[in-house]
Length: 615
Image (cartoon, rainbow, N blue to C red; front, side, top):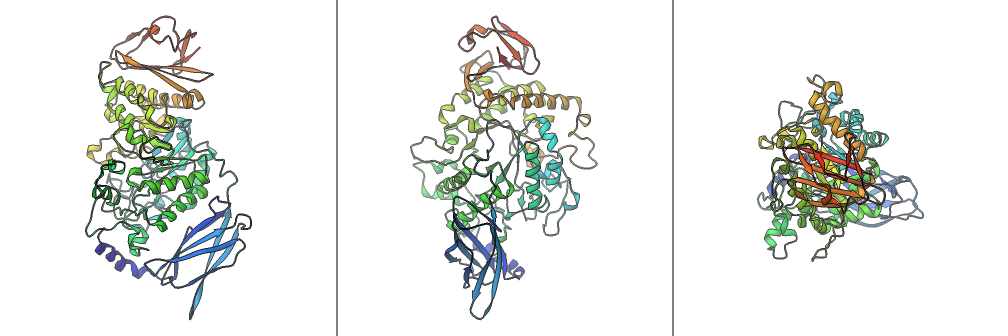
């Protein structure tokens, strides 16, 4: 953003600075971290010339750095793992002829299971929801004095009042559905005047938006989710902050964000990151340009900011007991900084999982960002999970069309997508989905066709990867992105007092909604204990007459999946699959219990998927 705007914010908000110390971030930390260094950001009025002193066993001040702004100190500590114990201590800031400022700080004991915790994996099914649009459990926080945007449910782009309490009140619903992990779009403060419901323009990285609840409410939500056997994934944003982020009124350094003489937007050309022929101007514009006028682009090459952000991520993992992170707009970030970030997290939590939003247009582009990918640039992102937008794109059309084996239509789209799996370092760590909060609603694309929905979900829950479903998909919620993002982010029916229907309960759903829910719930709950689906090998056969057949198998089990995308019943000749059916005589459909004799040809109903447990 141009410097005039930055100066405007400084002049406008400087009158709000009163207390000498306004912030110390992180607010507290833990002993026992593998990385023994801790950077404290201290923000207060004219503190830059103060001397910093700490008298606590095992703590050593490595360096004290001033910023460009006189209102910051960056203090780097070393915590001796053999000496430093959990406890409280004083940080004293002194300056001749001025009163000493004393800041109380706390080091906590790290969770006992921090290193052993298991992140989300292909054994999970993730339920993605938007907090503002899911359920309003506490109407008293709908409007908060400190936040300029107020609730207006009539405005599809406004805040609607969903919150953490509403999410917590419906954990049983998510568990009944059969999902095992919850990913919510960002919950941190968005102190802007409009469009704040989506959460991606963060104004305070250490604070839950008060319209969702408090930091304590979030910790309680995660604990309640764990009690139900549900994991929690936090959505984070490193590429940009919100224009009203607290530091925009007093930037620590001029290069804390990327600034230009006038507003300059990114060119959205992600390929420049790995294009060996890319011009510097194009690459810099992609990396440094702003995502939106309300979203200043963070400078991840400023080591003070990047240490701040790495610590912030670890702070949320440890404080809230998270099971995973989803990182927004992954390729828009500085790739080396992101590799450092991912490694810092997985060094502390070796079994933790992180997924990056890799909204790219070829499998090789997405594969580049996965940990241990082979590429000529010898780049390793350290990012375990990438998002398979190629498969999502195939799912948007494949059930609405038919094609010959040599055409990329119908079931061939699925086959061709899976055939590119050789590009990925770990196919089990691919997030797979038919829709999310940024895409067309899947039910809209299928025109409400229940049979196509069942085929799609049968595929999604039995192919490789980590399945994710978007809230409301299980009841056929629809929406047209061409009408605006608000239309694909509608309120979940029953999440607000006075709603005309309550889809959280079977009694409140229509018969067709119950059929969708019951089908998906049965499928998801079956999947929970099927290691053969989670990590088994996959053999697929070229679709014949728009019938797609593949097998999942390990040493103990074998599953056969048959998807008939035809609008007429078909006969499947089983002898074609002899190599996968050796010594197998029967298969039982997991959804209906019907047994099939696999020694002979079998009849398959039109637009039907069979998931057969083989005997």
